[in-house]
Amino acid sequence: MEIAGRYHLHVVEDCAHTHGSRWRNQGAGTIGDIGSFSMQQSKVMTSGEGGALTTNSEELFHKLYSLKNCGGLYTDEAGSHGEHVQSGNYRITEFQAAVLVCQLERLKSHIDQKDENAQYFSSLISEIEGVIPFLRREQVTRQSHYAFGFRYNKEVFGGVPVQKFRQALSTEIGLGVSGPYELLNNCSLYQPHTKKRYRISDEHWKAIDPRRFSLPVAERAYCEEGVLMSHQVLLGTRKDIESICDAVVKIRENMDELIANWRSQR
Image (cartoon, rainbow, N blue to C red):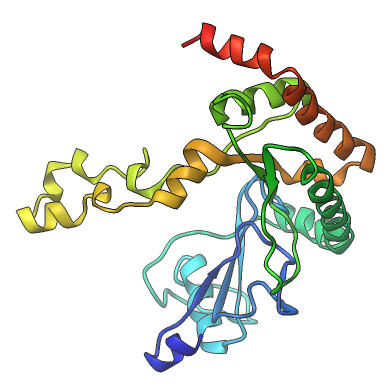
């Protein structure tokens, strides 16, 4: 925020995965000029699709309202008042809003339950050789947990790739187990060189090539270490948490079988 203030910039917080979290006791979405929350199906609060923006700036509020409301002005009066800016219809339905209001009433209790289970999960998983719980920064004073996971050390598991471990864990617990998002320097959703019209010049062609960036830490997390489960697992009981950790131990104790299965499919 200090840098933004120095250069007269607005800050938009991406809070898509962190409804209700706090950074140094300040709510996510209230630190920047605008907070952006997603309500898509997988999120901490969901209405199937949709989202919400927060701001304490009256000027930005009116601009955002026009952008989501076909360009119209915000007014207390009924009827059409013309278009203020060129835009489209990004309005959430009243039914979706009602669904979200109900979830707001449960949000704090859900966060408290997930946070307690996440800390218990971390304490158990830290005792298992070959897996390491994710670091939680001390500035995070409340965490809503979009996902929970840990780092996997394939060397302790006989060199078995993390993809095979995720599959084995998913089979054991009957829940989806995934990894982090694709790397931005090799993401299937961002392939600018597939469109010849983007070749404005050779210099521009090279500049938009995402492969020119080296992201070794992200690559290691995506390709070798990251193991993630959806936040719903943290809404269960302590027994549920223990069963997941027991599954990791079971895989570890039956590592020879996992290695043999992996090698047979190579």
